[in-house]
Amino acid sequence: MKDLLSTGDLARATGYTVRAIRFYEEQGLLKPAVLSAGGHRRYTEGDLERLGLILDLREVGMTLCEIRTLLDLRSGCSTAGEFATRFHDALRDHIAHARRRIERLQRVKRELADALETVSQRLAAEDRHHQCPCLMAAGGSAPRIVKVLAQKGICQHRPGEADGPPDVSGLS
Image (cartoon, rainbow, N blue to C red; front, side, top):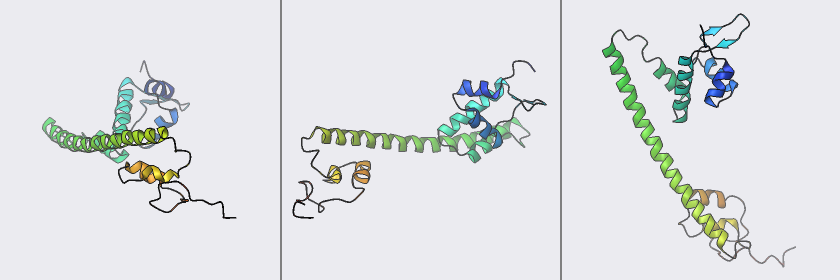
């Protein structure tokens, strides 16, 4: 076979590491076209395309098991109609999954943008150096990520105090 690609060639073409490519091979998702007597793996352009598909499917959140099932979709199909039916059903299910994932990502993106705005407003406040971090989440309108991260730890004031830490000058 001519124009075979090494594992390094696949890594350079995809931007992934040789170790990542070997992982997909170990998982049975990718198989070298040729394994030389010296143990060198060689892949075809079709293998590179398959790897690109695997990486894209992982990127949209598909599990290795789901990818394996999809890649094995043709197994046992004796007619084009049978394959088309299986493929149709699989695509419909994966599109629904991708749609839910996109909606979740968009929601998280909005929340992160809201959190950035909240934090930016707090940075602009003159009293930011004197207040407890949990006060960034005060008022109930702070995004969830601000509430979770800002309220972590031990506060030096009672809940509801908005003036910063209590006077501790008499404590020793």
